Length: 525
Image (tube, rainbow, N blue to C red):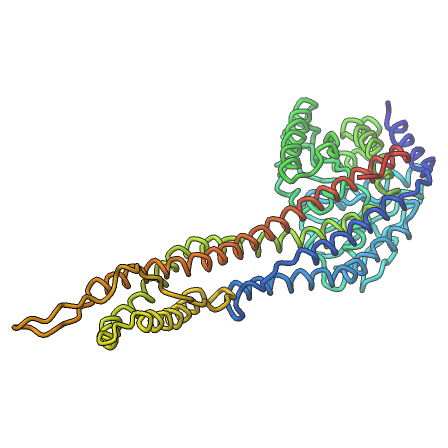
């Protein structure tokens, strides 16, 4: 197939292409339902902080997280309004397929655009250059700026024929502030990507990271290895001269295979469908220029192969264009709705989970401290208390006083050690003692008067007080454990909810693309 056939076939395919009118409204409606359901479920399953005391770190963290979720949901409409101009721009170029040309400085982006413009012009096609200035599209007769170093930070492009646009960017993140919004709209509206990489160091796949947003939007990608030529020495009229020559077919094939393999690996690493990747082609724009568009040189420079590759790219690019309105809303749900929530969940819930785990571990130690501190506060007072009631041997009065002390000191310790929790005051009903233990009366003798001892009673009180404090604090500690477990269950529910809606959104994306192939594709979950 010669040059004319490949170029003319490409142009003819563009001119003859007719988009079938498919109705994507059922898919879009499903995605709107997804957004509504997601908002409702998130708000329904906000974390409860009612079990924790005000002004504690855990409650503040929970309340702050809930506020962030609500605040994020409240931005959804505004975020969609920000993206809607991309759809308007897409409508402006409704019948044109737009390819984003991406690559490092010196990759030959502008040079390729200008050369393809010349090819189209030679075949009687209209050529209209444009660039962005002060937020507007400005058409011009001037070819795109070329140079060893690109010093401009603006988007420029060219309309080729009636249905083909090439967008030449200096870099996705290097546009001027005044052009940034419009540039992003153009990029959002692109239907496919041409990734230019120089044959001197082809396939620097880290460059694809900057394209992550576009590639995750399911746009087809064609790698183009540029500057596929080399300097050789030759003798002309007795003098040694350097001349530019084509790289041989074997060298090109090796580079193309290598770029394709590493690009596939990179896309899989980026969680991008590797099927979007087209087979790389190698070209030399300089050789075409040098030979004045000689047909044989065009073939040797890889341009027949390029036009065939573009021909293969056109169909998926037009397919993307046809469903673009639905894709834009899908991308909005992925990037402005789901991803920020997932990031918030990952950051905040991991902190909360770690906090609850630490608090669970601390509860056993806190119970030991509560019991020990309460016991130590009461027991030194017991001997004096027993002495006060020794004459009447009023054990009930002794236990009633100890019960009052226990309730007072236990409440203080609970508030001190378990200050993070919202707890009811503990009520101490009684201190049950062994009925066989009482004051010991030593009968008077001629040498000694009657005495009353309370050693056994003291030991009984000491032991039973320890048991009582354990019995009283165990339900409180269990209640605190329950609070933390309930919080962890709510955290896991939110994480599961996010994963569930992420999976549903992936299904909607699949439905969207399958629906284009088969309008009767089932749209149910």
